[in-house]
Structure formats: C-alpha cells, structure tokens
Image (cartoon, rainbow, N blue to C red; front, side):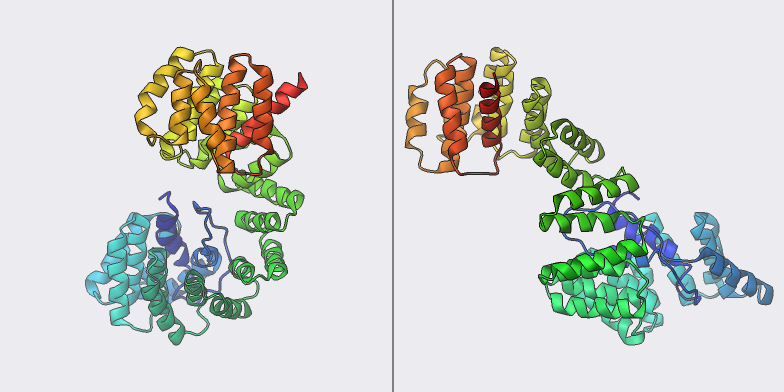
Length: 460
C-alpha cells in the first residue's frame, strides 16, 4: 500500500501486533509515509502504532507455547508473529481457526481487523473493530484504532469520541493521548492539544515522535524556541528519522536560518532520497543562493518522485529559460498550463519560448489554438493577440499604459519587451524591462524572467 493513509491504517497496525494485548513493553521503530506539505501532525500516532520488540514477543510466544500450546491466546500470538513476518495467509488461517470455535474471541477479531487493514479493506477492518468494541467496551487498542481511522478520515467528532473512551479506560494509553492531541490540533485548539501531548511525553519521555507533534503545536502558539528545543530532542532520540530533520529545517527556514535549514534538508535527503518533500525546500534555498544547476536537479528529482506535484513545473520551466534550455522550458510551461488552467501566463510563456526558439509558425499555431481559453478582453488575451500580430504594437502599448495595477503592468511590460528583443528593438526592450523590474510587485514568474533578461543584456 503506497498511499499514506492506507499505509498507516493497514501495515502500521500489523507492526503494532507485537505491542497490543500481550504486555510487551515497546520502543520506537522508524516509519515512513507519503506526506502532504500541509501541516499533518500524525507522526507520533503512526510511529507509535508501529512499535514493537520482536524478541520480547517471541519470548512471550515460546513461554505460552510451552505452557499451553493449544490455547487460543497462544495461537493468536503466533498469528501475530506470522503477520509481523509477512506470512499473512498462515496468520489468517490460524485466526480463522480460533474464530471457528470462539466466534466472539475479541483478540482474534482484533487480529482479523489488523489483517483486513493490511489488505486495504478498511470497511471490513472498521466493522471488525466495532465488533470488538461492542463485545468489550474497554478494549483500548480497538478504541484507539477506530479513533485513528476516523482521524485520518477527518471525522474529528467520531475520532474524539473513541479516543476519549480509550483514555477513560486507560489514562496512560499513548495512542489515545496523542490521537486526542491531534484532534485538538486539527480543531485549532492548540492549548488543549499541548496538554494531551505533554501528558504523553510525561508517560514516555524517550518516545521521540511526540516531541515532533508538540513542536508543531508550540510553533502555532508562537513558542518558536520551545518548538526548536523539542525538535532537537526528537533528533537526539532518533537521529535516523527523516521528519525530525525535515520539520526542523522548515522551522529554521521560518526563523531565516537558511544555512542551518539547508543542512537539515541535506540530512533528510541523505536518510530518504526517495521522499520528495525536502527537495522542495532545499530547491528554494539553493535558488536564493543563485545555484541554478543544483536547483534544477532538485526540481527534476521532485517531478521524478511525484509527477503530480505541479508547483514544480513552472519553477523548473523558469530555470530552464534562464539556462537557455528553451525546448525544455517550453515543455515545462506546457505542463504547468495543463495543471493550472486558470494561470494564463503559462500559455503565453509557452508561446514565448517557441518564439525564442525561432519557431514563430508553431508559436502562432499554439496561440490560435489556445486563444479561446483566455478570458476575453483580459490583459493576457490582449498579449496573446499582440503575439499573433507583433508588427502592430500600438494598441498593446496603449492598453499597457492605461493599466493601473502595478503587477499586471509589470507582467505586460515583460511580454512586450521580450517581443522587442526578438525584433532586435534592444533600446526600447531594455527600457521596458527596467520598468518591469522597478515595479514593487513580487512573487510572479514574469518579473523574475524580466530581471534575467535585463541582467543578460547588461552583461553583454
């Protein structure tokens, strides 16, 4: 199961089998996920559900087998060991054997729910967990598991209810405490979230992932120093955990500690080079440092790892433009336009790169095809018409001169200047480029490319 949700609700629970119900004390194992870049403070729950000590579980099984080899609990423990080892069919056969003679054996039903989670059958998994809770309302592991499922479904009301029941039955249940902290976090009740996470840390201070959740909460409570201290602790406790460095890098970046942040993103990437997240932030820092080739490599890696991360296409297209890799730039602007259909700049830039490649006929054909996609009489529509008839520039100059919004005026100046450069009207082009970059409006691709064209011309 490759998606983050399925991984946590499925395979994650199979790892938890060595912890739940057999009194095996736990320690943390590394876990991975496919993260979104939005705040998703589920590290602690996911990781805790994956904890286990195989040696302790194996010892418990050996002891049980010697004493009661045919006992249902012994069989269930063996089935869980088989699940841990990936032998799911054998595990299921043993669990089904127990259920055949004891259809209301809650531990067998709970184990069956974990198997269904591994298989990705969430509906069956939830039904089995609910059956466990109906038979034993104090089954904290089932309650916590249901809470986690509803949490990932963003059904915070149900999640909170199950976590509350679990905490009522076991005030030291870390999964429920951390789950409740996450619910409160998602509800933006950060003080309440902090209370639950603090309690979890008091119970098990050596568990690193709780500190990561607490750091996110502290950050949103404007306790940046406290957040940094927690992330430092998490990394000390588990120096091989990707998200410790990733989260600390983001925090340091918000503190404008770019060099330290860069080191953390480098470390995160060295730990897990197949996770795209750290590349995004590293690319931003590298680009600020003017390391264009290195930035390009990071954006190329991002797209290789996550093709639908469409934000990378326009950035990569601009960098290719700067490196005069115009064919590649055109391809990336076309992709950006496909993903962001309401950003008409990418259509114009796709046409411009063709023009710069001296493919005027293709540029004309492209714009004629796309002209219907522009909002009629928008400034982009007028630029597209100008690019179709560049010999007649008086009307576009008039429209640009009347534009009151600084950003739009700057964008229009860039496109007109770029066309003038192609027509060898260098003096007017440079005047327009200078005016475009002098306008105090940031965060859009045209200004960036205007600065590049201006710098390139001045360097000649």
